Amino acid sequence: MGSSLFPTPGSSTAAGWRQLNTPKNYPVFLLVLSSLIFFTGLGSRDFWAPVEPRYGEIARIMFLKGEWIVPAVNGDLYTDKPILYFWLVHFFSKLVGAVNEWTVRLPAALGGIGLVLATYKLGKEFYTPRVGLWAGVVMATCVRVIWEARWAHLDTLFTCFFTLSMLFAARAVLDKAQRNQFLFAYACMALATLTKGLIGIVLPGLVLASFVMIRREWRLILEARLVPGIFVFLAIAAPWFVLVNHATDGKWLYDFIYLHHIQRYTDGLGHREPVYYYLRTLPVDFLPWTIVAVPSLFVYRIDWKWLRQPARLFLFLWFAAIFVFFSASDTKPDLYLLPLFPVVALFIANFITAWADDSFAQHRWYRGIVVTSFGIMAIACMASPMAARFVRPDAFVPALIAGSVMGAGTLLTAYAAWRKPIPIMCCAVAGTMATGIVALAYSIFPFVDRFKSPRPVAAAVAGHIAATPLYIYADSMHDYNFYAGRKLIPVISTADRLDKLRQEAGSGFLLVKHKDLRELGGQNQDLIDRKIAVDQRAPGRWWYLLPLEPKP
Image (cartoon, rainbow, N blue to C red; front, side, top):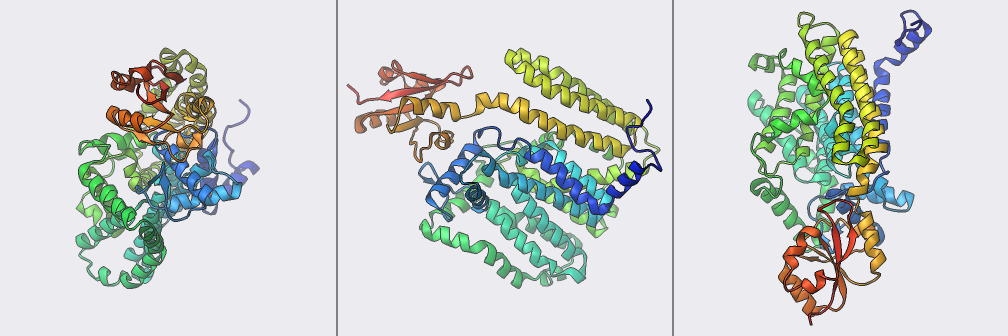
């Protein structure tokens, strides 16, 4: 063909490549890669239910009121999560002058980048810079991390702080000369607690307590800098908790601890799943790297002899403690396992590095598994436009764009796995995910946004009513406050409550889903007969406005 796709030995290009391919440039590469994946089109779509519109509205109200202490949504206290994520949104919104989709998602994207770099640092310190590099690449390009970093969720930010706390704790635990690193660990635990709650203390505590008990290194308790550590933790985390508790007469703290910690863990407030649930979801969340991870399961034998090495035991307990803790909980959202992702990334990265060094030359069948799996994925990607057309004919073109990009990249990855060194294959995986997310951001996401965005409903409602009171029936997700610009849309939970409202209130409108019309029939048939359609984008999910008037 005349020229090689890759630099030839001895060429000036190869010399430049070697200069770039040095450990000091690894963080820069990871920063560029993760920024491309997490920031491309970050604010180009509207908020999608259930979480994003709620977070956007909380931030909007804080911005309008200049509020920094008490988060609220739709007239109620928001006690699910602490304040740090909303502080960051508030700060970024102040910089640009408004709360929008970009500023609300920005802390999640920055948390994702921090998580990638923290994972690199873990790999560098536990193994080698190359292992750290591949661990960072794995984190930046696995499905779950990409999704969470591009969504208005606080879990990437929380996991970034948690991972840093574990990095500092590992230094302190594994090296007696670095016991003061515990203080940095406590500071990161405080930031994690301000981001997501008491889990910022509980998870590191589980890992460290398990390590101390199994190793029987009781002296670590005395050397853990507990007294100054408590002061560091409280200095960072306590002021806001004290202020919000005082401002709400204790209600915020009670709901936060009892409803959203104790009751959520024991009673399963939503997301109730069987104990083995995460065995199903974790392999999917780590795609496409699950394909590379499968052969490693046949190589590594994790037994007590292997775990006698303290660093290995620390990483193993990091994974095991979190996996068991959340598997035992009744509530099991997929993203809860994000704090153990750095350990899985290190596991895969270590295998990739050993494979690249030909440490597993006797196991040639590994390539067969990887090539076959990526080949199947390529076929699935290329077939996706036809599947999309079968569901919705107008989805064919955006699915064709995204499917072609992902299919071609996955096919190239399969070829690289068959014919090229393993690092080339891994670069192909990373390149496929990076170009794939660009294609998704500008083809699939805008198409899906047409159906998931609450903006059209809010605009249609505004077109029919101005300052007239608006109510919503049996829906407490706060999807429409942000785009409707309304601080309060009262929720009418039952037909009886609607009857009472009609007797007490004057004029107004009720926003109701198509599926709830039958429930409102009978006594309220006069309202249904005058319904106004405001959203008919998706069959079976239509929304109507019912003009409220006193009963005749």
